[in-house]
Image (cartoon, rainbow, N blue to C red; front, side, top):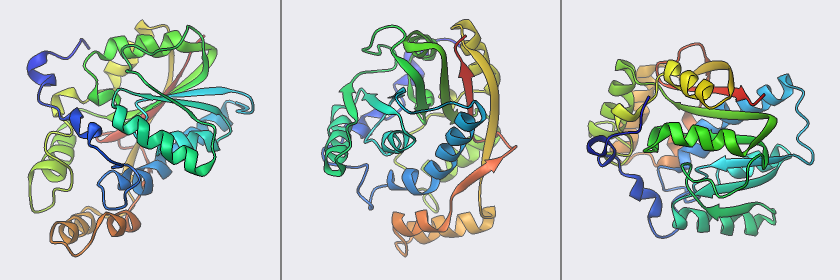
Length: 266
């Protein structure tokens, strides 16, 4: 997989993360459901991987690439890591830093992109990159940078969206375009930038990382129920709090949509 051409990359709306104010911890924001509906799946997966590896997080360092407002970074911190988050959106970094400060948590935040991670080689025992890889322009460079800042023996944990017919129907049409159900801003995702599991395995190998596994996800409710819930939100009967309360992602073998995986640096 190569660098994303300008004609495709210019279609994605990454500027939403520069919105003034705190769009991450506001329960009226679409990003709120990342914490309530998606984080339980991805954090549960990360915890399982670390346990499987007998990875003692005490005194270990972790970096989240593309931390946004810190909704996952804080959960990484709670896993026991000395945690750092970077993001190119300064408004999001400020929201993350302010929220961590309000909790009294010593999480370090900095502005920075995945293509240019502002830390020395072999700086971190673990790197997390979730819901981000499908947003970057130069994915090979991002994976290479993650490998560079990982210590030997370090673990890279990630999730992203597969490029399939199902993901075009669900993530693009239902989530973004069809007003009957849409709950995400237009162009928050671009289907051509989604990543097949085989593509990420190839990039990991090219950057000296040893891929270990992939797992999929699915809603804990049926598709008709999910559509009904989205319709309630679109009609104003529900907000994002109610939507987040009624469904969560759970681990599954199906990788047509959101999938997660990990790799090790030898």
